[in-house]
Image 1 (cartoon, rainbow, N blue to C red):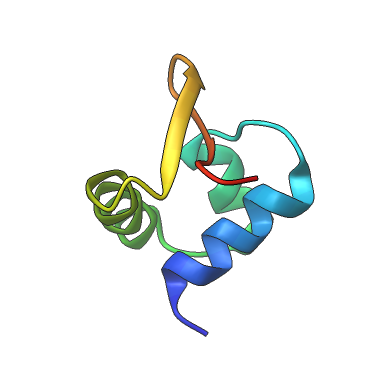
Image 2: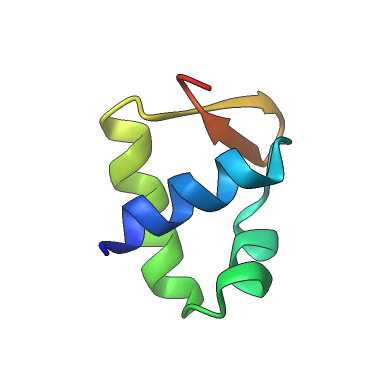
Length: 60
């Protein structure tokens, strides 16, 4: 499974907006990889930020 898919699945399961740090703790992935995936997900408009520095899937 791709990192972006893991992040999206984790966000959906959490059922609340998550920060990159929270995703890092939940998945145990390297923060650089998470930041890179977040950047790509934002560009693809797959995630949105309802609260500053917190993200959730665009299509819940």
